[in-house]
Image (cartoon, rainbow, N blue to C red; front, top):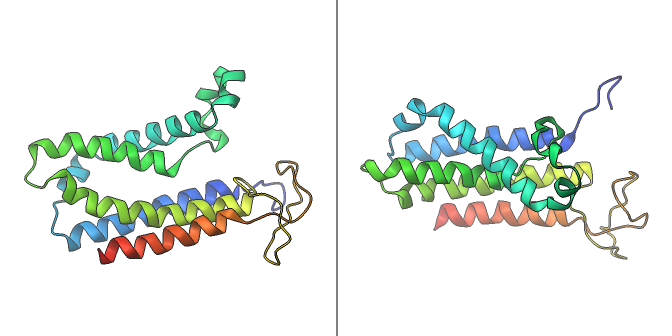
Length: 178
């Protein structure tokens, strides 16, 4: 909290990942000589696909919460979005759009995948800072303790969020090389 304001680090880093992933996607698109005109013409369609895909995958992954309170599905400001689900939503719309274009879906996928893995790095850093998706208790020196009600352990736990962030960062570079 900063003064009277509550800052959700998960949402801040999710938005940072969306922004930087989009910038990276646009730069990769330009370097691959793919036309960005489709994104300019259908930007609202891609935005809606990102939001619907992100929310849908978040609902599926946290289905127990939404089964107990089905009206919570319509509460979009709770931060329940999946970056990977948003990228999958964009991929579906991109697949439909590339059926009538010169560039193939696989060419676009070569650009979308590294940008998605780069955005996932920031998503996992946000999860680390907010205490989501944590690991099991550990005695290792890099174990992390959270002082929040959302984490059920009071002993040091594995920072699996950092493991995933490093994995996706390495995967981004591997995808760029391949």
